[in-house]
Amino acid sequence: MTVRSQSRLLRTLALGALGFTLLGGCEPYPVDDAEPMRASQESDIKIANSLSTAALVFNGISTNAQANLLMRTNALSTLFNNTSTADGNFIRNQLTDPNARQFMKYLVGCALSSSQTLPWQSSGGHSGVWMGGAGLCTQWRDIPPSAACMRQVSACILARNNAVNRRVELSVRGAHLDGTAFSLEEAPLLVEYDPDVPTTDMPIQSFNACATPTVGGERDCGWIKDRIGTCTPNSWVRLGAGSMAQDTSGLCTGPVLGKNKDIRAVLRVCSGIAGCDDEGPRFVAKSTGVCSPVQNPSVSFQCPASGYFNVMMAPWNSTESLGLLYVGEDSTAQNAAYPVSEAQAFRIREGAFYGNLFTRGVAAEVTVIPSKTGRGDGAREITHSLMSGSVYPQMYVCHDPGWVQGAAYATHRVCAIPDMGANCAAKLVGSCQAPTTGCGTFDAPPVTGDGDYDDCKDPDLTTWSEPVTVYLNGPCDLMPAGQVNLCKRHFP
Image (cartoon, rainbow, N blue to C red; front, side):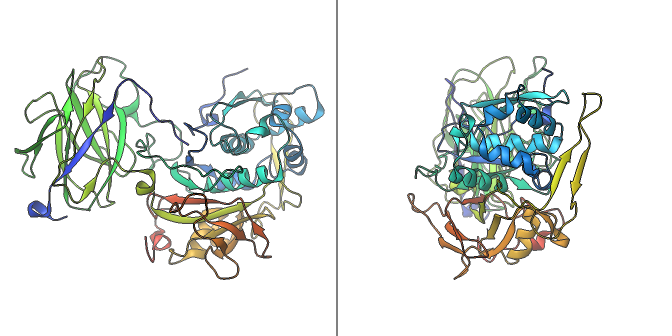
C-alpha cells in the first residue's frame, strides 16, 4: 500500500508527445528495522519487496516450532508487548535474531492496517515499533488469527520475498477476506528508493530536505515526487508546467503546456518508475525554465528503452514552497501518457503465491541461544541449514505462463540457493494456468480485468482460496544480474 500525498498543493503535470513526423514513435531501533511500506486506504495494495529469502527461510519466528505455534494461537499484542509471561519472554529472546525481526516487520506490514502499530522489544536490547500497512488480518493484533487470516498473510509475506537484496515495488492483486478487491491506484507516485542498490530503506538523496538554502535544478535535495508515465521507446516526449513546449532541437515552438502559479519551478525526468539524482544512472532530462515565461519549466526528451519515465519537481529556491502546477495534454500526443495508473505501470503478471507459513512440520528449526551479556544478538543454531526443496510444507508458488522458463524463474524467486533448488520458501507447482494443477480462476471477482488468480491448487490438488497475484513493472525486476534468460517472456 502506498501513501497518497495529501497536501494543499495540486501537483499535476500533463504531457505532450512529439509525433512521428518529428522522430519516430527502549533503545531506538535500528534503521533496518523500519517498516518501508506506507499505506493509504485499507483496500489499496502496492507494496515493496525486500524481505530476503534467507530471512524468510531461516528465522527465529516462523522456523522455530515453539514460536510458530505461539504465533498461530495468540494475538500479536499478547506476544510482543508482554514481558511478564514465559511465552512473552521466549518471543523476546527469539527477536535477538535479526532475521526474526525482519520477518516480523513484513508480517505486521501485511497483517495490520496503516492505523495499527505493534511495539516490540528483544532481550538483546533492541526495541521499536512495527507499522501496519496492507490490513489483511487486522484482528490479529488483538485476538488469535483465523486460518484464513494466516493463509492470506502468508501469501503476502511470500510475495514480498526476494533473493536479490534490492527493494522492488510490486503491485499485488487479490481480494480481502470480506470479498472486497485490492484496489489499484489511479495515478501512483514515483518510487523514492533506488532499486539498483542493496536494500537500505533510505530514500534517494534528492528527496531529502536541503540542509542549507539552495537554488537551481542541479541540486540533489528538496525535490518532490510526482507521477509515472509511459512512452514508446526512442520517441520524443515533451512535458511542461506553464511553458511553451520545446521541439527536438530545444527550440520553443510548441504550445504552452499547462499553468504554473506563484513561483519559479524546476523539473527533472528519470527513466523507469523510481526517481533519480542529477546526472545519475536513471537521469534523463531536466528543465530550469527555458521557454517563455522562463519561470515555468518545460522539457523534451527521448523515451527510455524501458518505455517508462517519471517526473520530479521542486521550487527553484529550496526555501520556497510550490504553488499550483497544472498542465493540459498536448492534443497531438499519440505515443505517451502521463500520468498512468498502477495497472499501466505494473503490467507483467508474475504468478500467484499461496499457502500457510504457520503450521506444524516446518523442515528446519532455528534456535536462538540467549546472550550471556543480555545485550546484542544471540547466536543461532539451525538444523538442516542446507536442504533440498521447501522448508515450509504448505507454501506454494505457481508461475504465469508468460515466462519462457517459468520453472527456473520461480525457483530463483523463492529459493535461497536456486541453482541447487535448496532452502526454498515454497514448493513449485508449475504454471498457474495448467489444466489440472493450476488455478481455477485467471481473473477472479469481484473486479473484472485486474487479472488475479484464485482457487489455486497444490501438488496434492488441494485448492487454496487466498492467493495473492503479483504484477511487476519490468520482467527482470526480481532476477539477479546476469540472469536475463530467466526474464524472457512469451507475451507481456
